[in-house]
Image (cartoon, rainbow, N blue to C red; front, side, top):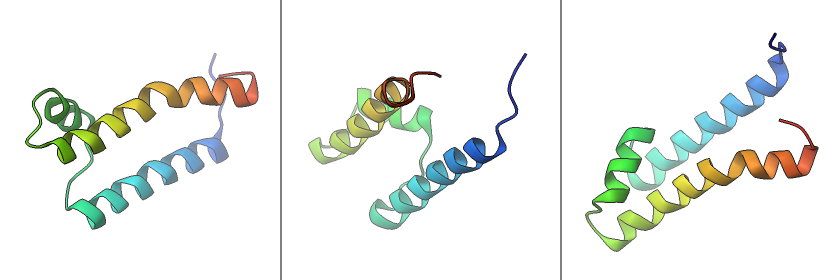
Length: 73
């Protein structure tokens, strides 16, 4: 059984939307996990690789940080 968490879902979705808008405004890029991973594996430049690595690191460590902060998933 799943828990209905409208406020947590709204907050998480808002953060994803904000990150997408900021990436578009700052770098002119569209945020998509598949494109980020593909560009990470074959980057056009070192700067291009850096922001992709940061987003992938956040995707990998975000749930762990949440678990440590709250004690639950």
